[in-house]
Image (cartoon, rainbow, N blue to C red):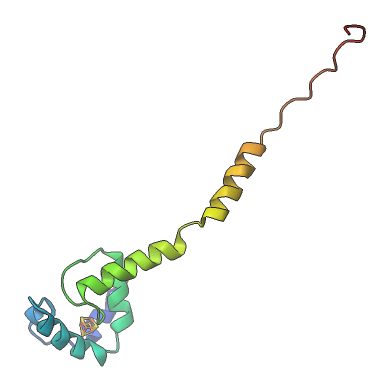
Length: 107
Ligand code: SF4
């Protein structure tokens, strides 16, 4: 994944501890920096793609990223209707060989 954006972050010359706060006030302080950062979007995508759970990335808190990941998983998960259709199609796909008619005269 491209990391060129990192050199353009508003946080590049700041103390990294600012972005790994221990409380909500610290999270908000970091988010204020991210708010005006030109690389907020790639920063967030990087954190999501690399499963970075700690710290503020792309203007999001740890909790916000967990929520965003849950939302994305739900949005891309197959729906029940789609799963039913796929299952039905799979079950119906192999057609049974035609059976020979019963010989005449057995009734
Ligand atoms: S969005 Fe925030 S954490 Fe990401 S590069 Fe910008 S200032 Fe740094």
